[in-house]
Image (cartoon, rainbow, N blue to C red; front, top):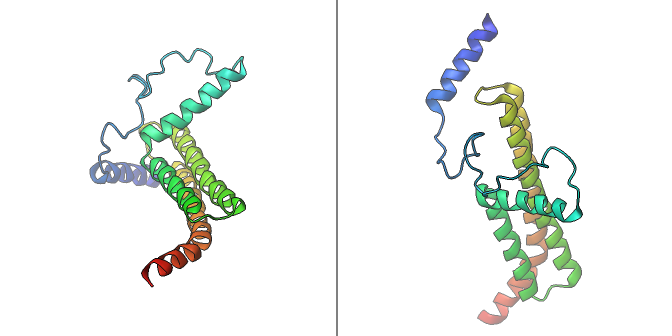
Length: 171
């Protein structure tokens, strides 16, 4: 009885206090068109029969994340900016590789976060569950930790030569 009351008050709270998500940023609904226009996924429930099809499905996932996930786009552009700055500052190839790998790790974590959120949404549908919240929060936390680590690595490698370049231009 107490748990039913807690669940109903939680549902009421979530319904009355939730922010509405614009339709173009929300997850596609089961009976609505896929934002990528991929309607023929007959083999989605089994192993792809060809390597080409496997890569096609993987690229579709990356495209989906780029189109629908704002943070994935932010991480992608920040990674490109960091690598571009590294090239501009003539960092060593190892330093550029480290920046690329840490930026790539953040994008991988964002893809995993999107996958976990999608599976959780599929499982709990429109209801609230504490374990669903924990799963989503932990996945988002993993992205946050990787993004902070990537930022620290990029700053450690880019900041000293950038400051040297700025000093040489100003003085």
